Image (cartoon, rainbow, N blue to C red):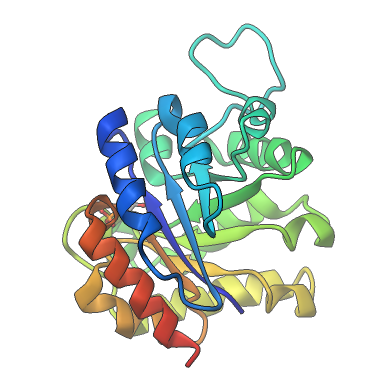
Length: 252
Ligand code: PEP
């Protein structure tokens, strides 16, 4: 199984900063079996795709619209992303669910649109703080997984990346313990197994939520954690490069 280190830059970095960060990352040795993905903001995607040419770095967008085209002012379709060489897309991030009212049903449609265009969906799920405190996180994750992925056939499922992102850990400095992460990742894996035992073992399940160089080794060492979706620490070339190096140690 490959280990993925994916950086979600959110609404950060202008064009100069995006290009400077990519220039730094071009000098990083990407270990065998590690995949590096970065997600700059929409205006810089085309230039980022060109800037990573000849490297193993892949460019993701942070969102897409589920429709192919039409009167959806301000939105971007999966086909448009494909036409500029974007090959992955974060879907269902908690900030999209929270601030833009994205529903599981809309997220399911986005996943379908992305797969139709050969773009890898990085599907985010995760419980709120109150759901964790009420010990209902397993139910929440099960519902999110079933609603978003329930209709996919095995071939489609096999092209996904999943990210478990406990909302209480995103940008808060709080991180799930290795045991808390492994418990939910194992649940996600078991839900995937109900679709197909063999394919379930090939789907990367990333951890996200204040993951940084000083906690990544412990998190990535869990059997069902296949890397990280990184926010804050992905904005810094030094920290992100260190996370890539740590990911390289997982399979050695
Ligand atoms: C994220 O938003 O996907 C994320 C994991 O952020 P952070 O690493 O800053 O918690």
